[in-house]
Each structure stands twice: as C-alpha cells, then as structure tokens.
Amino acid sequence: MLALKYTFFAILSTLLNLLFQYLSFRLYDGFGALYVAMFFGTLAGLLLKYILDKRWIFYHTPKDRKDDAKKFILYSLMGVLTTLIFWGTETAFYYFADFPAAQYVGGALGLSVGYIVKYFLDRRFVFVHKDERIGTA
Image (cartoon, rainbow, N blue to C red; front, top):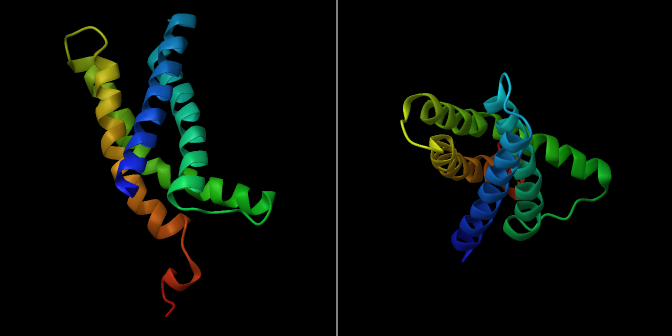
C-alpha cells in the first residue's frame, strides 16, 4: 500500500511540476526559458511532495514550525541529487530528442528515477525514528 501511495503522490507532483513548466513556457520563451521553467516546476513539485510525504508516507508531525522548517530544508537537500537526475534527463531530451515536447518526456522519466532514489534518502536521513538513527541501537 505504501508503494502505491508513494507512486500516486509522485505522479501528482510530477504532473504539477510539468504543469508549472508548461505555464512558464507560455509566459516566457526568452533566454534560458527551459531553466526558468524547470526551476518553477521543481519548486511547485517539491512543495506538494513534501506536504504529502511528510503526512501520508512518513507520518511525521512536526513539533513546531522550527522543526518543520528543519525537516523541509533537509528534505530539500536530499532532493539536490535527485533534482540533478531530473534536470539532466530533461535537458538531454530537450536538446537531443527530435520530437515535440521532448523535454516533458525527459522530465517525467527523470522525475520517476529521482523519486525512487529520493524515497530511500528521505527514509534514511530525513524522516528517521529515534531508534533508526545511524549509530544508535
């Protein structure tokens, strides 16, 4: 059931990411438009995915706003590697695939791989129960 929920949330976040990219391209098509679109798409997807993962995947209830902010920062840092996977795949499709909307296909593929990696990073380093911390018994 967890894998199904996580997959569903990843799909929702991917769709939101790609929607924000599409809207960004519609509003701006100048220099660096791909990177502007990827930035806004990533931000939208990150926020949604954090809220869903925190509550429905890892069942974390923050102690206060400071705790929530710390978790969000750590969650975001774990996303750096996965974002590089996503952006690299999308950029490669944008420049090397010869069909309309190639960047969206590359983005969806990159996000799929990235979300799988991110789950394991988040489980290991972000949403850790006291008895599961590294170096404790």
